[in-house]
Image (tube, rainbow, N blue to C red; front, side):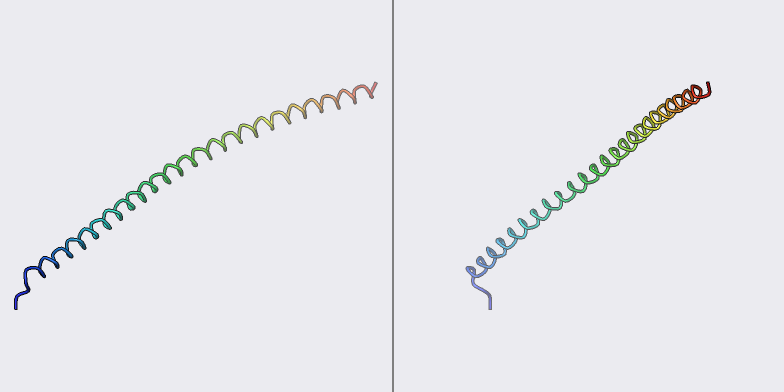
Length: 92
């Protein structure tokens, strides 16, 4: 028993529609996967930028710490000089 031609065409058309839906779904999945890959690249660049920023901040803090130490040393020397001068005055 051979199916009639109209039934064969109906099944062929249904298969074509199904194939078109599958192709559209595959294209959408590919587009989303490409988007995820782009996000991975963006995250990698963001991590690199954060690493560079951390390095710059550490260098800035080190310089600030150096300046603070220098200012405290100068203030200590000045205070020591004032105290020494006061003791010299009291000796006389």
